[in-house]
Length: 50
Image 1 (spheres, rainbow, N blue to C red):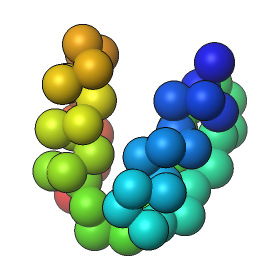
Image 2 (cartoon, rainbow, N blue to C red):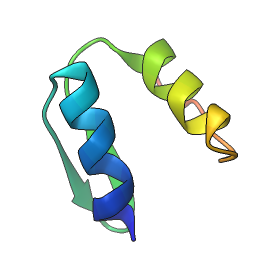
Image 3 (cartoon, rainbow, N blue to C red):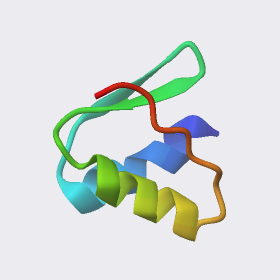
């Protein structure tokens, strides 16, 4: 469940975010930290934009 995946990351980094169209959107400039957390959990991460 994406909600259960996103919530601890948002809490840990103190950022907001939302889930739309089966995608997680995080607010703020924490991209590298988010990628690191997700990869350490065994997720494949695709960096898009900026």
